[in-house]
Image (cartoon, rainbow over all chains, first blue to last red; front, side, top):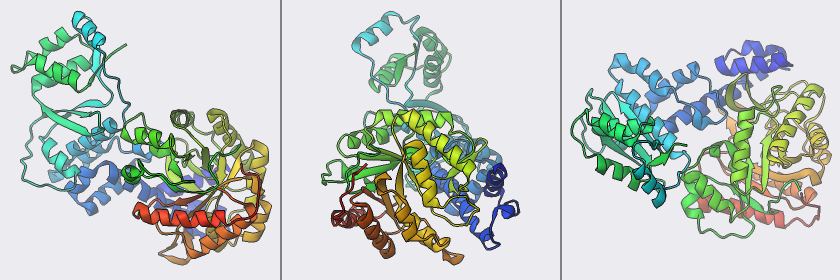
Length: 248
Length: 281
């Protein structure tokens, strides 16, 4: 009995139906097994298409399908929840597309992954006025972090504006994609809309430091190593958008 | 009680329909979701589901528990299912007599379980694991059959054995039954006679298609309207079981909501035309 389960699992993964012959009542059934392999492949590819919409727009349906099939061949899902599938896609794309000078597509995938994470994240409760007052009183000690519905991303190419248009389907204007690091904050607002903003290096450093558990004063000091930025304005934006929580 | 769904027709709830459904008021309507699409921590999709489930009965239909696997149901998966069931008002929970993964690899597939004494035992154990976790009886669905397998039991017998061993109910997928009758010559009348009507907590109907490479092979594709043959089989089943909750399953090529509701209303008429009175649930 255990052999049957291993054989069918193996067939679905690699398509070699020979291993299933001992379990089939007729030769005719061998080609019917393709239903199980085709369902597996198409559901994985469809999941990747839904999750990496900007990459589909950038590469075109047909080529993305080819790339996704390669990914599936090397990465059998390890979760029963297909929405979890594709976490390694940015690295896979980087390795696969680098030689074609399409490595920026890996950054698009990184942003698609972050969108997915932020969209399905737990909602956080807005800090009360007394929480805010306490944070300000204990500015040297209080340990804050980004809400789970917010995330920082660093891309190797400047792709955020291209990404936001590709995610909706197609480019409406010309954009330059340069090999310059981009620091991006992405978050879900109170209406469930996903927003993002490019950050200056100092702004990123400030938010990253807060998220790493550094007290506000230390985070501000780390940020000051970069260009001059208005720390109080950034902090106020983080509070207004309910992007900070206290680490317990 | 194996389900508290109304004995009327429901539809699969898709995020594509969310905006139209907020102010929807249709007596007897109920929704079904695939559990795995909502095993998430939060966000608008889960929030909308919670709001809708407070107004309209909700059935949760799992596709990933892999009840028919010799491996125990994954504990992490069970924990996520429980979290979902605790976060929304649930009228019914169902899963499949199938398996979908092995040794940490998952195939997003409903693969066939040989109906042997050994598989009866481990499938029953897995049903117990789910029921113990979510603290309610579940319904188990008959599969679409594509290949004939050596078996100790007929499919209907196998389902009834599981009902007796675990206290679960049956989700009779009439489209799957029709497909199995064509693909592997399951005898429809015999099958329906063996099932205890009181164990049937829910019925599914859906569209199917033909395999492009084998015109004799029907595929459970859920991508088309319910076929005439399946409607007729539903009518026959309902005349024997009495009024039951019936779901229009549509997962691909989604039509506009109004079109899906026409199918739903047709199913509702079939249900209400049944004069047979049986205990429900």
